[in-house]
Image 1 (tube, rainbow over the protein chains, first blue to last red):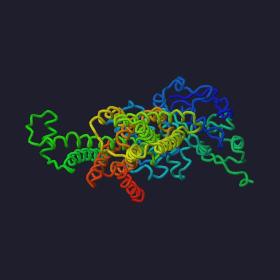
Image 2 (image 1 turned 90 degrees about the vertical axis):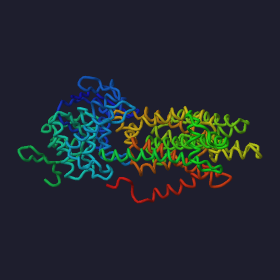
Image 3 (image 1 turned 90 degrees about the horizontal axis):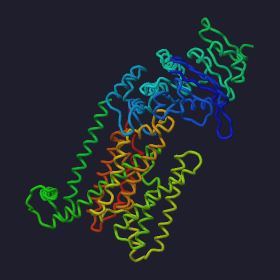
Image 4 (image 1 turned 30 degrees about the vertical axis):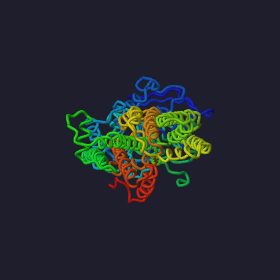
Amino acid sequence: MSIEVKNLSFSYGDRPVLHDISFSVGNGEFLSILGPNGVGKSTLFRCVLGLLSGYTGSVSVDGTDARTFSIREAAKHIAYIPQSSRSIFNYSVFDIVLMGRTSGLSTFRSPGKKDKELCQWAMEKVGITRLQDRCFHRLSGGEQQLVLIARALVQKAPVLMLDEPTANLDFGNQLLVLEQARSLAREGYTVIQTTHHPEQSYMYSDRILAIQKGRVLTEGKPKEVLTEQTIRALYGVDVEIVSLYHDSARICIPAHITK
Amino acid sequence: MNEIENKHRRTVLLMGIALILCILASFTLGRYPVSPAELLGVLGYKLGLPIKPFWTSSVEAAVWNIRLPRVILSVLVGACLAAAGGAYQGVFQNPMASPDILGASAGAGFGAALAILLGASSMGITIGAFAASLLTVALVFTVSRHARGDRVLGLVLAGIMISSLFQSGTSFLKLVADPNNQLPQITYWLMGSLSGAAWSDIGFVLLPMLCGLIPLFLLRWQLNVITMGDDEARAMGVDPRKIRLWIAVASTLVTASAVSVSGMIGWVGLVIPHMMRRLVGSDYRFLMPASMLGGGIFLLIVDNVSRNATTAGIPIGILTAFIGAPFFLWLITGKGDHYEH
């Protein structure tokens, strides 16, 4: 399923946040949205997800304007994987995953046997079956992130949106979650993440969208986007980019070290 | 997974059985002794079974006209308060939420005091309390629509402010009330008591109670999703505003009904859902029925104490606070919580 954003602008009151943003993500593509803090990354993320609606321009999902979706329909198209989840009450991992089935249920129903089977499938897929009876709050950040991915999978939405999925994770878990996101994209899911890691988005994603001051700075294949100029324009720092393993990885090294 | 669910299901079932046993036991308690055989006889006879009366007419009156309505009302009021408290804790994502968070009790108190001041009958007081309770919550909703910023916070703050407004209104009514008969009546009403329970009370509140309890029961899965926060709930296909409104309307109906027949009975709505979380966890699929049953059992037991412990009959509202507050302290100082895995 493809997402197409056309000329999207958004203001909080009279404070403009996003200007004329356009990009598209195709089936099976993994897009990383890069940009410094406070440039409107999360606002853009929320607009695409349908959590903010006061934008001009359009977001379309396979050609259908996302604004015409009901909340339930939107959930059937796009699933949201937050950075962390914070219910004040304790739920088991299984219960959390099961909540992903809600968009497929009528308002007065509780999930049934089929829904539970789907949860088993999703938990197996991301490798958390052994955690199913554990309390969600007591899991590590990486495990929680995998549970939230499983919850998004049972939602049966073809588009997955991850909000800074690696922000709270240790190095090992960051890679684990990114591997998972990439393998889902290989299966045909359309995956969008926001991130603060240029090097990781280079290694894992298919395309990078760089946002600066509410506008698209540049957009394209990682090899085109991840350059010294882009990093300087985005973050205001000088780096030297070193290419490794036949350019399958690029490392940004701060200028003071290379001098 | 299914093992845990089955365990919780069994717990809820056991609570249902416990409730029935408590109900039967409640009839035999009291100044006028009724044997189990007489009790079953009267109940069967009244339900139309072909039983030849072997009991005295005063036993029949005690069972049917005095104890049965009081028992039914205790169970209903307990179930309503606990269900509304549990639901509010979920939609407001606040473990300290109780059924009166949107002003239902303060409004009912004011309505009852006003009705007493105007010399209304006991039915008139119930109706006055019920109507004032609904109006107060409606007012809270209207005011909160104009609040800037976070909607949920606006609603809760409006609830607190308008509650306090009506409480001062009630205090004023107490000030101007006739200190010989009206003032004690108002004070007694505000303490909360089921001692005047009659069939007419049940007739008045049964329908609104069911109109609230049934949606609360049916929406229990949506409640789980709401506790994840508005963004996540929306992304999972739940309209948090719509569900919150439904829950608030249903909870207001049950709270207003409960308070209008029983007066202010505090703590049940706050404590019972937390107690039930210990038993069946946070999943509202089990927590909601468990809270309804647990609230019923709790209030029935407390009312039995209130009825039998002293000849004067301590108002139940005092007892629930007496039991509820220390219990809550035990709950928050207790070792850890129920999901220690």
